[in-house]
Image 1: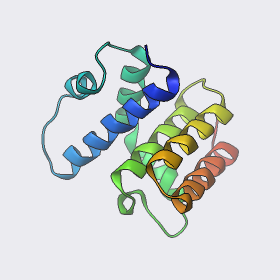
Image 2: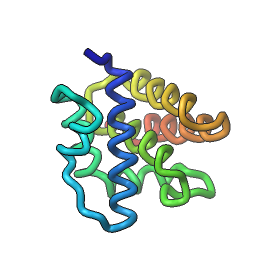
Image 3: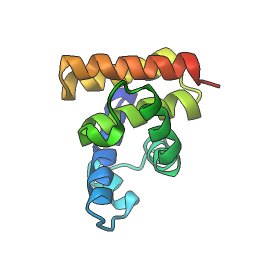
Image 4: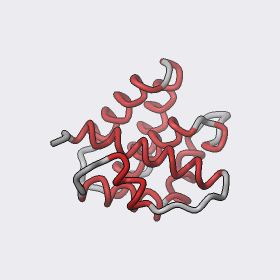
Length: 133
């Protein structure tokens, strides 16, 4: 059984795939993409991915508002996925803000470089202080 941090990594990987499929206008089945990454169905993963996809426009709008001199479409797909997950958890779930931000930072430390990690931290911190509920 995977812990929440490992499940967030699964979410990030599926979002990465979705971003690639969307960019190339290829069709995909979200449930199949999830199943490829996760053998056992998990509500946390399902709800998070579907919530992010359903709220993508608003999530990207918030990210773009706080990305200084950048936009989401200029970031690589992994960083887009990490930011989207962080904003989703801040804005649409009951997950404590410090946990949502810290989990995104930990993913970024694993998959991005230090400057991107700082940028993601800054964006999520601004979303938390300026926008959250």
